[in-house]
Image (cartoon, rainbow, N blue to C red):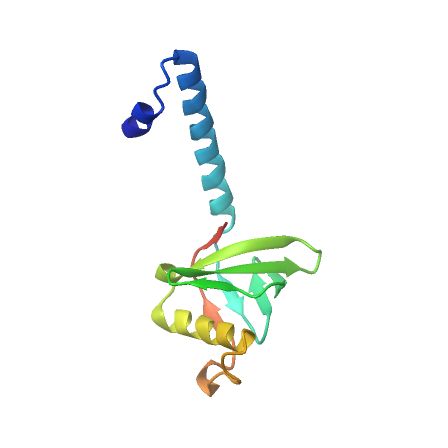
Length: 129
């Protein structure tokens, strides 16, 4: 935090204090939002997901990067959530199963291997983007 304070030195103490308070409040808000979105995710066939005891449908194609996958889900009440499923919070088998589901959704393959055709269960952390 000391490095942050040096970068925010505007020469006006009140502006510096306001900037530090703003950054601290935004950090707290961001951590609270991430904490609310931690939990186990179950990917069923196609675009049906189970999370927080509710059924969710994938409403957009997932965006995949090397460190994780961003999915946009909508529940039966119309509530939408954008979740990051991070690769380092999943075991290797769960990550591969999730990638297999992603490949089917994007038309990269025509079928999921039999060992992964059932539910691909993940227990990683989910974070809002």
